[in-house]
Amino acid sequence: MKTINIIKNSKIYVGESLENVHNYIKNKNIVVITDENIKKYYELPFEKIITLKPGEKTKKLKTIEEIAKKLIEYEVDRSSFLLGIGGGVVSDITGFVGSIYMRGLKYGFVSTTLLSQVDASIGGKNGVNFYKYKNILGTINQPEFVLSDLKMLKTLSDKEYRNGLSEVIKYGLILDKELLNFIEKNIEKLLMRDEKTLEYIVHTCSFLKSKIVNEDEKENGIRKILNFGHTFGHAIERIKNIKHGEAISVGMMRALQLSKKLNFISDNDIKRIEKLLKIFKLPTEINISTKELMILIKKDKKRSNDYIDFILLKKIGEYKIQKLKFKELEEL
Ligand code: NAD
Ligand code: ZN
Image 1 (cartoon, rainbow, N blue to C red):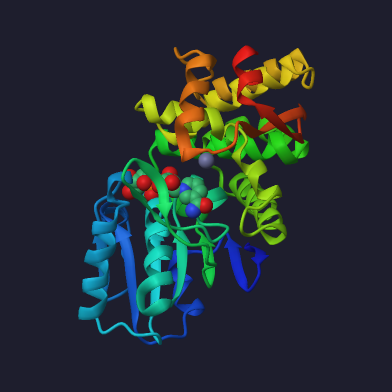
Image 2: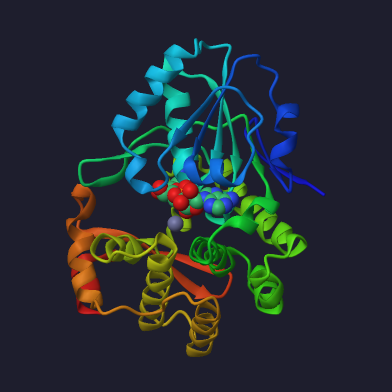
């Protein structure tokens, strides 16, 4: 079974397989961008394949240059199609090249990690890291399609799988208490990566993200709520060598503690969330004080203002955007 979500003219097919991807591309000249791990596990039925080294370090301008050279070799013009097969690193790079090569080509993704199926492949943001900053060069441009192949999640390492579960829990917390209930009721199946269970999870998360992006593609407002747990999380990621999802797990716990201090969320709800994160072996604390993190957050992003839009939780499934002055935050 496959289900569909739509962002502008871009369709997201949850439960569609890599082997059917040809049905979605009419162009004759197709170039695939993927990484070595995908190549190791899967037969890719294409002739022109650019294989990247896996990992975040590949997300840099040099890679974009190398790909551009290959595209010239492969006689890519505006009638060609770029297909990214992989996780968030591959889709961020494919989307960026696809947006700037000859001022824009058609491109699409087969999304192969849980994190990318529920987050990175959806919403049109792409780009690379530059200088000290993550994702600082990029565009917002929607792919022609995203195929989320749930079977491919079977070969993902446990660590990468948990990394995605952290973002799944985030959607439940800010937007959908039913999703959180579902996760709690289906822990065993989720750990087994049961396809039916994953179909509901991936479909629900991609539906929630599509809805937000349709309302606010350029992140001038509501799209910011997807950053729940990320303000602290990004600061943690910069000083600790842990995975994004792990940092976000700690970041969500810190945001919950802040919500409690401001009299929003109950102790019981916080305990419930902590328990769930721990079941998935996601960290809930780390040895950095919130004060230290605040200093980093303040320094980050060359902020000119002295306040921050913080995403808090009123209760499970209900977010609250709160403008907080740094001074206030440091005192909390
Ligand atoms: P990733 O692409 O690095 O994939 C994680 C690892 O899993 C890699 O080693 C990869 O080779 C491997 N892998 C991928 N699919 C596999 C499969 N089916 N079986 C076995 N191994 C597989 O990372 P990710 O977690 O998918 O994405 C993280 C990236 O996404 C970050 O760069 C982040 O900035 C970006 N991101 C972008 C957005 C956005 O809106 N554009 C949102 C969130 C994250
Ligand atoms: Zn994230």
